Image 1: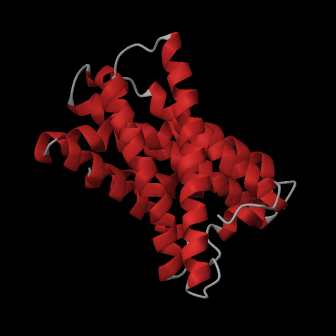
Image 2: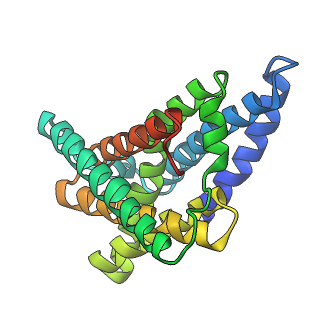
Length: 230
């Protein structure tokens, strides 16, 4: 698992260097940085597929699970809406109430995403990255690759929890302080557990991809309207 992540990081650096050469001169730094985000995610997904294909013949099909059916899309949409209500609204409200009782303000997290959402040049890139690239690439790695490997070693429920923790901790670069990181984990770990359980239950990666896209769509909508906290 770690090898794939490191390989993806190396390929991302190489791709980033090539991107700087190929992109038109004079592009604003914000646009270049915004493009780098989906590039990093795409590299992670492609590296995962390439690693599995190289080491295990025919295993790429198992990576994504069984062939999806129409009902899977409906399950994904329903679970996505439920995830938004319970995790974004429910957990977010509970966190806000606890912090209010403690006399603390909600810290800013994912500041770069809020900045990208406010910029008309980078907002379309953010939307494409969050709704298309991130759900596919992250589900391929975290649920298609990491989760089954953990299940083989530690069992189903420990695998669900551990894969969700890894998913959450990888995103901690989106915050700058301890409290912000804790709040981010409070949202992302339950979400990662939901993704993994759905993948195990239904046997296809399409469902967590759809749920992931719905959750990200809600988060981006909050950012674009200026209501999101991260």
